Image (cartoon, rainbow, N blue to C red):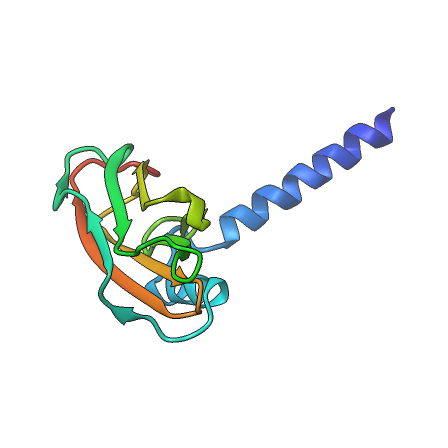
Length: 146
């Protein structure tokens, strides 16, 4: 029984030191790397709309709406939407997958932002074409860390 407690403590200490050792916030490069790992290719501007406030008084729940212009038919539809934040502790915010049966490629969510940072959205079409949009949101009260 004692060795189990010791093992548990050792594991917790290792996890705690790993968390302290990593960067407190993601970098724009980490956000781009995550997005590039999700969707292969070079995204271009267009088709994606990101509605979000310019200033969020509270970073704990920032409302955003992402929509992609698409007919959502069997031959042309949005396959996925990837959302990243370049200043959060972890860049990935959300991933949504679609089929033509969705009828509309739109999501509404609330995101937690740690500081003033940029949200980046990439939409992947069924033919592999990528579209992107980004927007900086100023946070006046921290959401993730303060």
